[in-house]
Image (cartoon, rainbow, N blue to C red):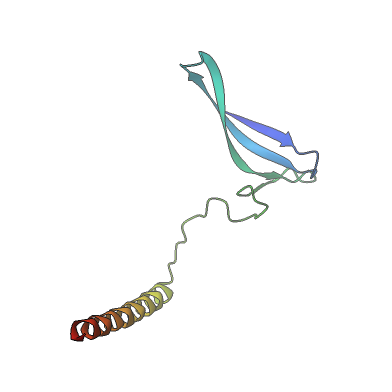
Length: 100
């Protein structure tokens, strides 16, 4: 396993990758699998995690210690209300079709 620095000439950004080597049995040669770690800040040498689409901070979200259960509960209530409305509308439509 190695850390690779790759400079993009077009944007001037240096990306940092984790490279893992493995043996390819079919081609009978060694291959490398690269995984993006983030961007390198040249002034400080710091690596900023990124997902590869110029959106820093969204790469590999860490699990939050505090989960906002109130927000989750409100989302479930909205979803349940929408489902109940849909079920009522479908029952009404079925009753109308049976009456025809």
